[in-house]
Image (cartoon, rainbow, N blue to C red):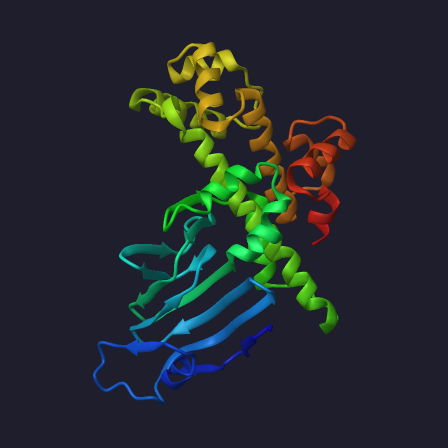
Length: 330
C-alpha cells in the first residue's frame, strides 16, 4: 500500500513527529530537548511510488543537532546531496555525505542485502537538501533490472552488502535530480507518474554508473600510479582545450606518453578511446550550455563539434535520451 507524507513551506518537524514512526528513536546533545522541540523546518516528501520503489526528498533547515535511529530494510539506496553534511551508520559501517561542490553533484549507491540498524547524525544549524530513491530487491528483480542490458552483472553488484559506490553525476542524471526538486506543474493525477518515471530512470542510471566503474577496475586493469597521473594530465589538457582542434598526438605529447599508450589508458579507464571521450565531453558541455540557456541549438551543435545540426540532434538524443530542443525549452 502506498504511503506518503509532505511538509509544506514552513512546516516544522518536531521530535514527536519522528517518534510516530515504528522503531524510531531520537537523541540529542541537548538534554533539555522536549517532544515539542523542532528539529527540521521546510519541505519534506516521502512516498512509495510503486510497490518497492520509494522517493524521499527534503529541502529543510536543521535547527538542532540530533541523531535518529531506526531499522533499514533490504534495499538499494541511490543518494544525492545538494546541500548540507550528514553522517550515516548502517550496521557497523559509517558513510559521510556532503553537499555538491562547484555545481558538481556526487552520487552514492549503497546496497544493504540484509536488514540493518540505521543511525543518522548531523550537527544542526544547516540547510539540508537531498534526494534518496530506494528500491527493494523485489522491485529490482521484477522491474528495475529489466531496463539493463547486463542483468546478470547488475544482480551480482546488488549482493555486495554495504559497498559504497560514489561517482560524479552526468549532466543527464544531475538534470533528473534537479527536476524532482522543481517538478513541472502538472495535473494532480499525473504528478505521481511524473515522479515515478524519473525515479525509475535514476535507479537505472545509478546501477549503470556503478557497473561502468566496476568494469574499469576489474582484475588487472587497475592503473599504476604513474599511468593514472598521465591519464589525469591528459584529461586536464582536454578539458582546457575542449573547444579547440585536438589530436591524439598533441594530447599524448603534452601528457608525456605515446599516442598508443594514451589510447590504452583511456580504454582501460573510460571504456572508450580518446576521440570518443572528447566527443562525450563536448556533448556534456553542450548539454550544460542548453540547460543554462547560454547557447542556441545551433551554437550547442558547434560546441559539441558538429557542423550538421541533424547529426548533433541524433548524437545528443542517443547520449542523453532527450533532444537538444527539449532541454533548451525546459
